[in-house]
Structures are given as C-alpha cells and as structure tokens.
Length: 182
Image (cartoon, rainbow, N blue to C red):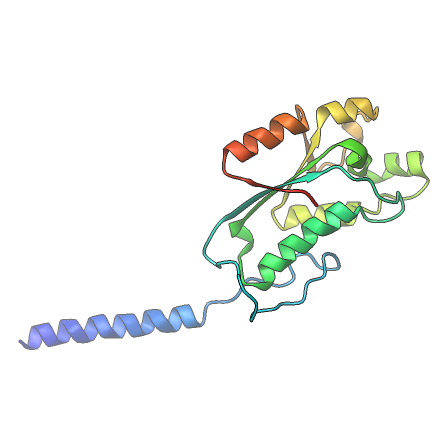
C-alpha cells in the first residue's frame, strides 16, 4: 500500500513539474521581422493561431512597386510572419514560401545590378535577408528571369530559381500549402 502511495505521489509531483515547465515556456520572439510588417498583438481576438500547429503557406508575389521602395508584397509577407509570431507561433512552425514572378521579378536582383538598372540600391535586400533569417523560403520563376533578361548571377543569393511559378505553386499546394495572394 505504501508503495502505491509513493508511486501516486511521484506521478503527481511529475505532473506538477511538467505544468510548471509548460507555464514557463518562452513565447515565440516578436516581431520576427524587425523593421517591416508592423503588427500589433491582439490576443483577445478570435480566431487565434495555435502555437502548436504547423502553418504551410505559399505566397504568390507578382506585383511591382516603386523601384525605390520596399515591394508591398514582400512587406505583406513580413506582416504575416509577424502576425503569427504575435500569437506565439514559433518560427519553426511557419513553413512560408514566396514565389516571385511577373512584374515583381526585378526585386530579386542583387544590389549592384539593381543599382545599374534602376539607379538606386535595391530597397528589398534587407527585408529579403530578414525573411530568409526568419525561415521564409524565397523562390523566383526561371521563366520570368528570362523574360526580364536577368542572369542567374544577378539574383540575390537568398533566392532560389525554380522552373516556373505555375509549376511551383501547383507542387506546393499538392503538399498542403495554402495559397496567399499578397
């Protein structure tokens, strides 16, 4: 009988310690993307993202912006990352992919080449680095690179080339990614 009581006490002590560990778990850092995608946490709103779910999103980025300003679509991606982080979702649970094509394609050009074409440093370079550091995968449509006469060596090293945007979007959606059009 004493043995059963000792086992029960050990189980309850273990549960109490576990509850303390969970209660003290560090929330996800916020914002994940400093300086872009401003979000104000709104914990009383509904629905809120689950901290434990993995979110798979593919962003279809086609819109151009002012060559001297950060692309609004990239800014929207940063805002999505920060919104999930504001709810405590960890970076590792955000499987975000951005497919860049169409009029947005030139944002992938590294700063030197961008300056040559647009007479200004690429205002997207810092955000591209921060998105990559936050775990966002950036892809550019290889067909769009050809159309815009952008050589592979001109592409920012944080961005991977794909066969095409349509094939990439279909493949990722087949793997459970939700499409978002910023």
